[in-house]
Length: 225
Image (cartoon, rainbow, N blue to C red; front, side, top):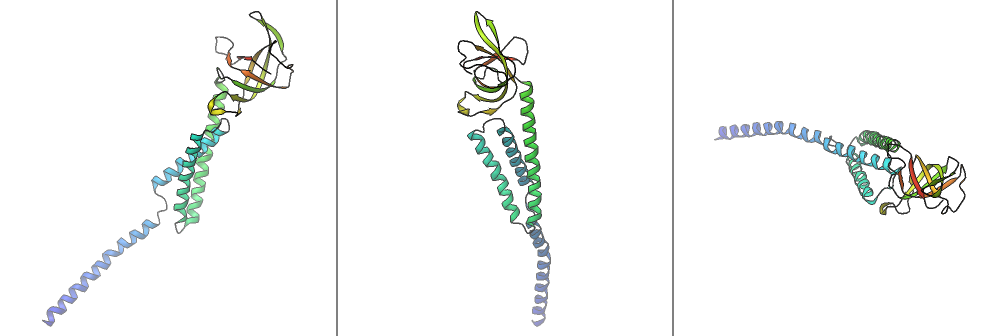
């Protein structure tokens, strides 16, 4: 009986040692997993949030940022905020936070640059002012001359555009950055103030194509100046 109990005790000790030995790798894996600050999916979300922020910031330099865009911008900031919170929970948080800041700065800068570049390209090659009613603020760059169109007298001159107030519900009382030139035909009878070369002018109306061919010069009938 004594020999049997001794043998059983030895067997139990052996099993306990195996259990501890097999448990150590599992414990090591748990420790290793705690070192993973952000998963690949979370890093991808941080990149997406950075692109959203840079794109909206670049867009806002030229056009009004609508309420819907403010919501999207808040989502992008919240995504990055979650990433920062996760990083601060790590043991080596300062190094991970540095990587996160560099990553966010790079993608915000790239998306901002690309958006700005695309808008400039669009402004340079697209007559997007056509049919857009509004107020155009610009500088008179050619001396006005009187011309006769369909039996009515007009002042003909050109302005260099600085900003535009489009008559839209989404841009109430907002002037947006604009560039380009407009050739203006203003009725002599409705022009309230003299037109002088080099002075600022506010022209109200709707630009139209001057000719049927593809030309960048546009025609606008001015109501006021």
